[in-house]
Every structure is written in structure tokens, then in C-alpha cells.
Length: 436
Ligand SMILES: Nc1nc2c(c(=O)[nH]1)N[C@H]1C(S)=C(S)[C@@H](COP(=O)(O)OP(=O)(O)OC[C@H]3O[C@@H](n4cnc5c(N)ncnc54)[C@H](O)[C@@H]3O)O[C@H]1N2
Ligand code: MOO
Image (tube, rainbow, N blue to C red; front, side, top):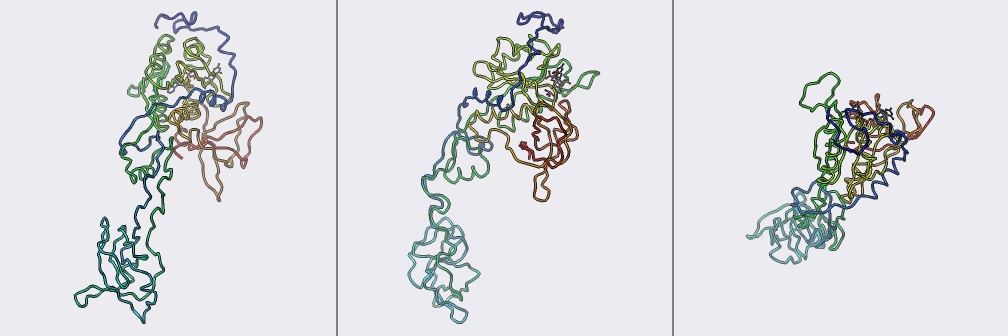
């Protein structure tokens, strides 16, 4: 093992790890909501960049977009048929067919070439511009056509209500309407709006660059074969996926040994190079829990190192030079929850998202929940809709150390502190995970 190079903590290194500092045992828990607020107080909007519309999916808008013109911006035919003057065909019936002379042919993309007058019609296609004089479009299926005296005629056996099959100017959007506001996440619908109004370059918030490292001498890389007492570093990759889903760009720095100096260098380098830093592991009270020690040093300003929640009671937040560090638990369940409750909102707040926290639903507990605790539990679970009610089922295995049921969960069921079994049928809050 490496000799200590830091005098941060007396006798605090891997070779002589026992730390008798009582500070690590005297942690003051705060609620998850308070921790979220403490973090939010440090969030600053990230800078912006201009990108092509083609690559804007998933990004967050950094500009308000107003309509420069109405939409549609011309009177548009909703059917393939004939543009007519409704009063011309008011008397049409199966006994009294009315014939109009076809004087124009208007495909999509072209403007009418002659004005319609009483007794005439223009053949027109769906999406084409309706002549100013026409007030109705009759579907092709309702018409007959014939040629006579070298002219083309259209016959109708029925009258059609005035205005039918014409989309008026501005039906969807009026000029000057606010279409999208800063912080809107760009999906297919937003891209359609932007494309419609010719916004081919979009100003968006830069994706926060998020460094991820894991601490643990027991950690193997995913490529390595298992060894007695060692496990593969799954948290770094799980966190990278969570960061991506939140809208950030993950940078997996890998795993480091439980060595204070190494953790310190890694943390400081990451804080200087990235927008947010996440670590996993080493935040409890164990002999090798180096991250817990580091955040109590004067290297960073600690915001909290205990949250009254499970899993993730040891979740720690700190700040250095305005940058946030999240030292999450090594236990996969706790690591996952810490990221969803604290890191995800931070990434989204930096991009001005109005949907920063996990959406909350009210549900019915699907079966009894037996674990009692003085802390609020965020129990991974799955949602079902039964007889029109949302029912949330806690996962069969939900310990902090359990990894496998994270993949089966689409919500976190919020179980308030309780000293009794919570029976099935209890109304609970659930936080929806983004996969749901
Ligand atoms: N005496 C006490 N012991 C513990 C306490 C306590 O209050 N007093 N708290 C327990 C709770 S609650 C949790 S949660 C864990 C938190 O431990 P750490 O965050 O310090 O994490 P580690 O000890 O480093 O690791 C815990 C567990 O997770 C595995 N691990 C670590 N990193 C990874 C990774 N990258 N990928 C997959 N798995 C990982 C590690 O091997 C351990 O099994 O502490 C309790 N103990
Ligand atoms: O921090 Mo631990 O995950 O509360 O169980």
C-alpha cells in the first residue's frame, strides 16, 4: 500500500487507516428535501451553444421562440377536391345536379392562377392554397367530372356547408405567439415547431460535463475476471447512464483504490475539469471510507453528509469554487437513489429545466411493507394500473446493497418514517423514474 503523502488527516491513509476522529460518527441528518434545496442554492445556469436543429433532440432550449408568422400562413385545402363558392352549389341534389366549369388546377406548392367567379371551380389538392374567392372545398369522391365543348366540368349532387375543408390562416398559431420558452426540452413535437418556423439553428444549454469515479480497492474493471473478495465496478456505468438520461454528458474516470491522497487528487482534478463530480463509495464510517474524510477537510465546503433517507443515508454533498460534488454511497441501491434525487435535478436545473425533480404521483401500496425505519424510505418498485387505480409494488429485494432489482423498477415508493407495518392499500407518493 501507498505511504501517505498528505497531512490532511493525521494517520489517515490505507496503510494505517484507523481514524478516531469522532466527527465521522456525529453526522447531522437533514431531510432529502432540505438536501435538494441546499444543492439547488448552488446551481448556476450553464453557458449556451448554437447547434443544428438536426442534433437538437433531447437538449434544453436557451432561447424563447416566438412565431414570426401565423400557421398555416395561407388558407389551406384539407382534401383533394374542388374549391368552390358554396352559394353556387346550395341547391344541388340527386335530382338536380349542378355543374361548375373547372377553370384552374392547383397542386400543392402553387398559387391559384385565375380568380374564381360564380359558376366556376378549381381542382385542388390537399395542402394547396385555396383561391381567395372560394369558401369551400368539396371532396373528389362527392363529384363527377366531364368534358364538354372543349371545357372541363365538375358536377355535384349535394350542397356542402360553407367553410368545409378549408383550414383558416393562423388556426394553429398566430403571428407573435410564444411557441417555446427557455428550458423546454426539445423532443419530436418541439423539433416540428422549430422546423415549421425555420429555426434551423437552435440556442441550447451546453450539456453539463459530469465526472464519475468510484472508490474501492475491491473494484475490478468490467473487463477483468472475478477474483475472491473483489467485484466489478458497476456503479460508474450505472451512474453514467443516469447522467445521460438526465441530459448530462458522463465521463467515467474509472475506479481508484481506497487511498486518501489518490482520492484527493482525483477529486480535485475532476472538480477543475468538469462541471459536476460524482463519486461512489467510501462515504460511510469505515476505516477506508476516504470520501467521507475528504469532504470534512478544508478542500471543499461540505453541504451535508447525512440525509434522513434510506437507502442513501450517507449521501454527501459538497461544493468547491461553485462546482458541486456528490459523494454517493457505494451500495448500488443507495448510489442509484442518491443520483436520482440529487444529481439528476442538478443537471436539469443547470439547463433551466422546469421538470427538474422526479415527477410525483399518488398511488396505492400494492402489498404490505414490513420494514420499519425512522428515516424516509425511497423503495424501488413497479407501477401497475389496476381497475383504474395506480398501484405501486415494492421490489422483493430492496436493500441498499442489492443491485439486481434496480433494473425492474419504474418508481421509488416514498415510505415515510414508521414504526409499524404499512398495509397494502395505503395511499403513498411515488416518484416516477424516467424509464416509466
Ligand atoms: N458501522 C457502520 N457501517 C455502515 C454504516 C454505518 O452507518 N455504520 N452505513 C451503512 C450504509 S447505510 C451504507 S449505504 C454503506 C455505505 O458505504 P459506503 O458508501 O462507504 O460504500 P463502500 O463501503 O465503499 O461500499 C459499500 C458496498 O458497495 C460496494 N461498492 C462500492 N463501490 C462499488 C461500485 N463502484 N460498483 C459496485 N459496488 C460497489 C462495496 O463493495 C460494498 O459492498 O455503509 C454501511 N456501513
Ligand atoms: O446509506 Mo444506506 O444506503 O442508508 O442503507
